[in-house]
Length: 179
Image 1: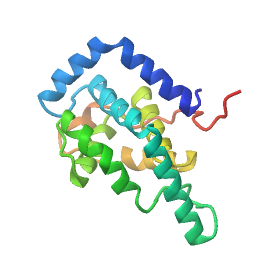
Image 2: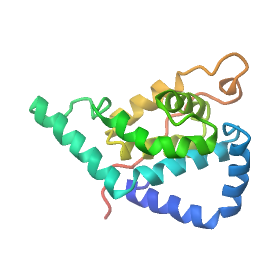
Image 3: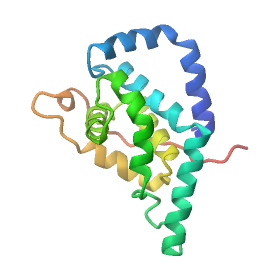
């Protein structure tokens, strides 16, 4: 159980330590969309690190404040839907997704989510999904809802979904405050 910032630091340390794995995954990615857990993890880790940047986090907070001011209350859905977030995320995704065989567009983002959802049965990938969605401003309940929705995506007959189990519930303490 880790808090979100500790998790980001852990990922940054892993990035420094596992450069060889990263190079292998980049070679895999240059051949198209990631076909292994490691490739998907590298893609998601790249997004997490970019979404963790100060400018991005400040922008998410402004979107949340704007939404709350418009409605006069905190979002009861935990920011599952946040106006402007998709466009903001796309600024990062345009740069990252093409490195992993996806278009740097709304369609590429949707394709990436469907593709990566096939790996949600893996605890590390599921935690990475949650960490990303926390950086995108979602509450714990909204992150669980998103993971459940993403886990229901189909990847077509004989696709990746057929090779990986359904998403397992994971215990994630990304909302915990550091002691």
